[in-house]
Length: 309
Image (cartoon, rainbow, N blue to C red; front, side):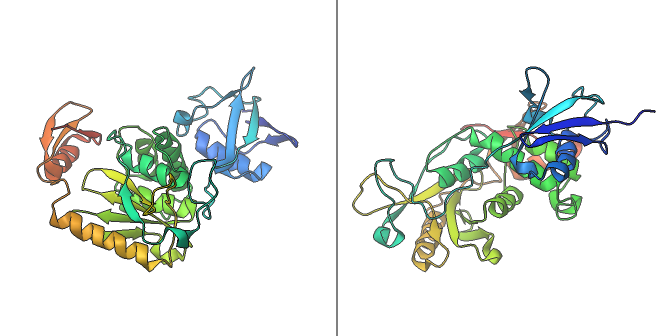
């Protein structure tokens, strides 16, 4: 059998990749190519055909055979910039300068409501990173998570994920899949920030990346089902907001703790034992987290959506 080879072109020249095969996934191919061209997987776009077209992110876990990549094909590799935020920036209208942290001291922590569309966690993280609600952030962040998890199989084992690594990566790419603690931990590590989540049901703050000594912290609020981002507005509103806070700023953390306590006391949370769900695969209606878990174990169905009351 002839050897399987691919021609890989970058702006600096052409390489021959000869250690891939038709059973490799697109993600595995990107990992192989990364070693040849010295471009991180997360910064890599693969294009194929004429005119060259990007390989769809939905194909990340499809094999080369499934996407019809053949021996002798030419791939173009583009290096893209990952929009990691500038942590020193306080998000404000473009015609305003940054507002330094101490100038906002005493401002109010406010909640920015984002759509309840199964991607609220990702939209919320996108808001604290970019200062605006962008519902397209979900697909991008799902891809980041899938790539990070797939490239660290020892760290993200079946025992951690609750399913085989490859199955999880396929699942998280689906727009109806909800994010939670695993996804927050991955995004905290990827962006190099602490993500503090106010849990209104238990009146506590869960801090992802707390042990990493990151310089900056962002805040989300979680009611048992839905995530929203928090931002700080100055006492005298001037159109500017702040979503990044120094991890050394105990005053803001204290404000968040008070907010968690108040939310629990006033029952600003969803009772996970009583809310109604619909299985998106067989359309069965379910009540509460326990029924959903039992249904998943019995049928293997893992995709659920909340039924608005």
